[in-house]
Length: 623
Image 1 (cartoon, one colour):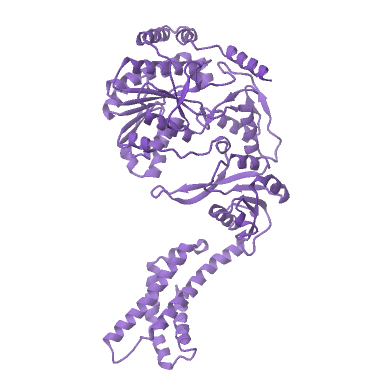
Image 2: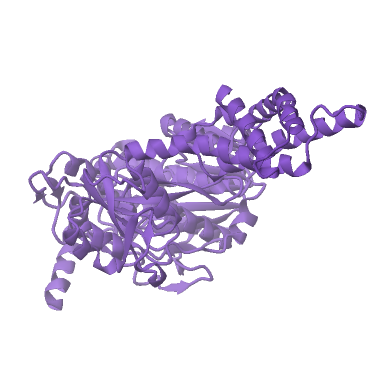
């Protein structure tokens, strides 16, 4: 503060001398002396008002410069204003007032001196930690892919020492206009398709993909960077919740979703918004991977209430505070957490009566294939009769729309989990055909990356421990989709449903799990340690080599929504369904052979050996 007072008074003295061509008359120098206390006081107040003494100047930015401009202008202008008022009151004696240009010069000089003194601290800090002038050349060598604002931000942070002992050797970009230029002293070279060559040529240790708004699919670029063996990170743009504008970015490690996730498609969400805005939505299994993501996305459409219903309280509790951090106190009134089982008829009735939901999304299910093989009675109780109890509650309480989350394992199932989900699909279709005011529909899709119980988290843990990675069979394939994409498409299907449909999501091409494991090893393994091995443990009970999305007799047609298709589900009379449910209920009561009972009520329930042998024969014929 004392230093600022010295600077502003020096600026006034120099401004006066400049105005008089360095020959200021004595009476004007007396005015400078008389003005000094006033100028010091008013500038100090202005600097304090604009928060100049609360800024950490080593991180000063353009906003800080605007702050200084306004503070110094207010200080200089208020000095002139007070001097003018005093002169107007006491016209016989001029204590302060000087020619107007002196005050303009004074402001510009104060701006230069005060601003310069503060930005010198940032310059000195960068000189100590490696900056655009004296960038250090020691530590890990980093290649930044991209040369836009995100790359600039990353390079600046690395040069400031915020990412450890490393420095940026080169930046790579495809924009021909940037050829031969530099970004913060870092040379920009062309050709992202040549990242493998550049990694060897420049002895790169780490690669940062800093493309905040990609024009296309980044998967080929990520795969190319992964093959270099360098540690790979990327910038993720963070969006301001209120404005929707990109606010800042953060750097994170590349994950398997980046490699396997498909290019984002901007779908028309107007119908989804219309469906959920102002509505009460109940999500069973609301704490699970899909249920929680559905909740996150529905929150954006201003529902009247979201009711999460789950047997496990922990995931719901965590989700509540996650959303509270994003949306604030509105979550307190919008999100309701209800602990309960879908098999508990009385608890379901209590929750439906309390909240009167208009839309129900039924995501609750036992999904773990090997566990359900050893607990078939629990799978039937939860996946079949839990669906029945929830659907009956929806009918009795006047729910408008009921959406079942199904799975590709329901198609020609070879395991208990798939068979029970197929029974749930059949059950809802029969309820729809039976006639009620509730519209029943189902959405079928494959595996979601990084969900609870997924193979992806298991592989990652095994790789980070140094291996080995356990794989059941070298030829096993699965469909994969990211959790946000799956949830978004479920909402799209729900918005266009009219009742009785069985929607199937376009999962793209199936992925060989061996290829997935190899990609993850490249991504997560430490290159300085021995290579991670893959060992084969044999197919687990109920596991088949491949998955299907539709039955042969169902057929498929496109809808008006990209990646959402519709099948023609098989028709069953309600009396047939009652017979099937009676058989399963009797088996539950008597603790009978549930596998045999499921084979009897689900005609397409096969032993896995039959379908696996068929796939092996098809593969041999193709060769």
